[in-house]
Every structure is written in structure tokens, then in C-alpha cells.
Length: 113
Ligand SMILES: CC(C)(COP(=O)(O)OP(=O)(O)OC[C@H]1O[C@@H](n2cnc3c(N)ncnc32)[C@H](O)[C@@H]1OP(=O)(O)O)[C@@H](O)C(=O)NCCC(=O)NCCS
Image (cartoon, rainbow, N blue to C red):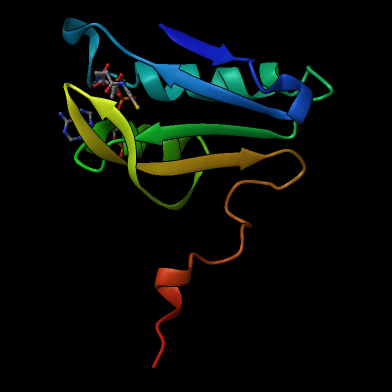
């Protein structure tokens, strides 16, 4: 199952969510679904940003997101209550007209003093 949530459509944003049945996992289903969803989303002219949120432990979801060209943006601390506890979520996004892999480097990769 993959979905595009259009609540913020008028603001140019949509949220992506997905889940794969346990017996079908590890075969590229989520990655393929995400790759198929992106060009569909861009057929909606008002959309400029597709965003998805991943719990930091969810390596499979993070890998699917990056394989489908979503760039990591950062950690949203205490963003959502899941199972009665506030959780941190990693933010990933794709931007219309920004080919995947050409985003500005993530600040954490720039080093510093
Ligand atoms: C997260 C989820 C959607 C991934 O679906 P999937 O079809 O198994 O994912 P894919 O087969 O496309 O694999 C994506 C990547 O994760 C890796 N992966 C798959 N299962 C993994 C696991 N258990 N541990 C670590 N990596 C894993 C794959 O090797 C692949 O890596 P690659 O991009 O380097 O090739 C699925 O595990 C799921 O439904 N989980 C429960 C719901 C959920 O977490 N939804 C996402 C919310 S943000």
C-alpha cells in the first residue's frame, strides 16, 4: 500500500506513506512503489514538494526513500506521538525540478570547526 496525502495540496506539498505486507518485504516493493508514485505526483501541477517521515530505526524505509530519490533533510525531534510516546522522525523530501542527487549537501556532511 502506498498513499499520497493531499491535505496540504493548496500549499504545494503532499505527504507520502507506505507499508508492505511482511511476506512481501525485501523484494523491492516499497522502492518500486515510491519510484512509480513520484512521476504520478508531478502530474498534479500544484505540487512542488513530496515529503515523508521515517523513524530513525527504520533502515528499510530510509533505504527505500533514498533509492527513490528522496533526500534526507534532518531530524524532527519529538514530532509525533506513536504508541503513547513522542517520537523523533527523519524528514525526507523530493522537490519538483530538482533531480535527485543534485540537492545541496546535508549540513552534517560539511564538517565544521
Ligand atoms: C519499510 C517497508 C515499507 C520496506 O518495504 P520493502 O518492500 O521491504 O522495501 P524494499 O524491498 O524496497 O527495500 C528497501 C531497502 O531496504 C532494505 N531492507 C529491506 N528490509 C530490510 C531490513 N529488514 N533491514 C534492513 N534493510 C532492509 C533493502 O535491502 C533495500 O535496500 P537498498 O535500497 O539498499 O536496496 C516495510 O518494511 C514495511 O512495510 N514496514 C512496516 C511499515 C513501515 O515501516 N512503513 C514505512 C513508514 S515510514
